Image (cartoon, helix red, strand yellow):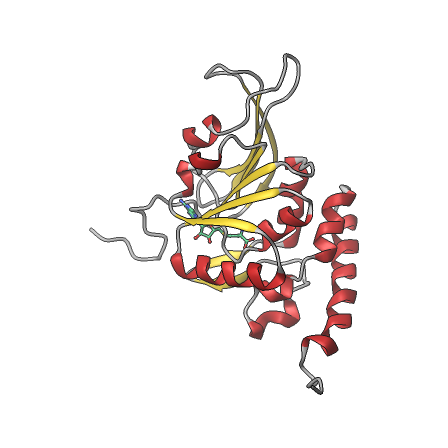
Length: 238
Ligand code: SAH
């Protein structure tokens, strides 16, 4: 079959060059984890955005994915993924599947990825794209503030929406340290209200309810992490 001018085969080299340029831009912005950069260099971000926005898929910017949600900026994905310090075969839970892009990057790093999304339409599309590209991600429709107990504990949990506070179930679903002096699972979560959030990393240090260490990093601006009853549109019912 002859390839049309817009077919994947004719656009692939162009996207590959743009991915390489994106990786260099992220490096220049301070992302130094080579495994994260390599994963971003491999994942087809253009497949996770609306066809009308594909030309902008390798700009370092967030893009709309419908329902008031966005695919995170590549810098943000790289930053959060670096903080997770993912090792091959780690079990990673993502809260906020959105487009599926962050989940795909985690997969490319060799993690076993679980992802929860509250918007059915977004989840359906993310599943389709992940399946087409061959990224093996287990997904679930639901309130990610509850985590996903069936597959816990996790080596890492990444929340990709701004959280007013840290949901307790996520802390409980972090892996306990394997031995004294070793670190347990880590939660990477942007904490704060709609004005902006502080990227926060919580590491489990023991088995007790207070055995967690907290570190704070740069400020970001995410769409909100909402409750199942919550409404993330602009209208508020009485
Ligand atoms: N990780 C995504 C970015 C998603 S934006 C990507 O790579 O494209 C944040 C996502 O979190 C949105 O899709 C939003 O619907 C979802 N979300 C918000 N609150 C949630 C909740 N309580 N549980 C699950 N998903 C939630």
